[in-house]
Amino acid sequence: MAMSKRTEATWLAGILAVALAARVILVTVVDPGPPLKGGDGPFYLTVAQNLANGYGLSSGQLATYKTDPIITIGPLYPIYLSVFYVAFGGYVTHPIIDPPVPFKGGDAWIRSARLGQAVIGTLTVAAVYALAKQVAASAEPEKPGWRARAGLVAAGIMALDPRFIVETSAVYTETLLTFFIIAALSIYLAAHLRSDARLYALAWLILGLAAMTRPSALALYPVLLLHMWIARPHAQALEQSIILAGMLALILTPWLVRNYLALGKLTMFGDAAASHFWLGAIRNGEWQGLDDFMRQQLAIAGGDPNNPPYLQVALTVIAQHPLGFVQLLGLKLARAYLQPMGTVFFSGPSLKELTLDTVAGRMSLAALVSHAAFWPKLIIYITHFGTIVLGVIGMWHIRRAWRDTLPLILAVVVTSVTYALLTIIPRYLFPIMPVFVVFAAGTIVRLWPWHGPARAASTLRVRVPLPGQEPAHGGTAGDDPLRVQGG
Image (cartoon, rainbow, N blue to C red):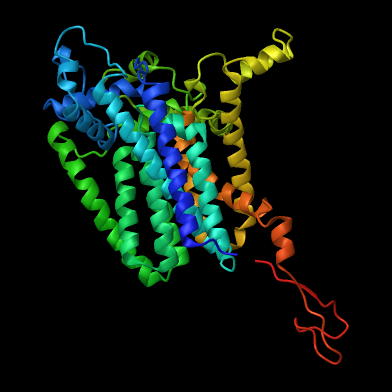
């Protein structure tokens, strides 16, 4: 039985309200002033500060009077942060002195930006709801009632999953990037199901915004183009390919022009991909920190430290140990998937350390379950692995609808492979985690006893045929006259 539109809207509004409240409470009450030392956060804040002060998209603290144009990241997230820097008094927070004043998570402009991310995170919940409904409509077209349930279950998971709550408060690109990717996939799937050219164009545009947030999102364009040529008539696929090329030119050309004017060379994102590929091929393939990176870079630079031969060195290493490189790729990917996002938010030892201490007898079971870090981290592990396992089951279960679900599965595969080839950090995979949630919701809807005994009894209809009359269900007179009319 299909859920009424009003009931569905009420449930969705409640879920979105809970999602927003959880994220706002985290930013304003639980973690109002996080430390911002090292990592990507202060870098993005510095670029935003420089942009707002008229130095353009550049790195380097203003206190040093040295700023260098940046090209290794997308411009959209620093632009987002700079809006809050201008609007909420950032100018007086960081005067030009030496040494630079550290960023403080409790500053008004930073907290406001994090509250903005709480809103964006809630919009991602809505995008996941829409995407899950479309997947359910494609997989189970004869069961319209499942669409609303799948959408609401997926939204409910996203609203309450601590990984997605914690992530929206961090000064990283993940919040913005996840929203753009999931929104683009949702709109693309809607365009595919309805054969709507305008929705296709909108999907291309939003995916372009994702690429301007993090360049790796460009890898999703060939994924959707491949699906387009498989699933649509070639004439329509050609038309959309031309529109996509125009949309890419519209989005990327200003960035190319800016880089040419700032650096004198036509480049999209500099040597970021090459340097990450090099780091992902040497040693254990992991990021060891900026100081280590600079030492390694100088070691291979030779006579030209401005143009290290990243690709040459990486390919040489791979050629010497091709099997070892393949094993390294698998190891990096496994490590990334085995480490959930968000556990470091909760202070204390890792769940692995706590468990090993208990097994080794250094901690009692009672001490383990009463430890402040145990339950939050355990819940994150459960939701992380639970949605992945249920999501893979859901992908397999609706494999007959592969023409419709292929873009989502390919997005997961291509993103995983892209980062396996580069330096991989677990949070880099985070923007595709909602895709697992979408498929996991479908699995839950199939397994959960939605109707219950009372509903099942109410839908049982007993029709006893009169002598010489055919049974109502079209069988013979000897057939069982009981007919269950479920929904």
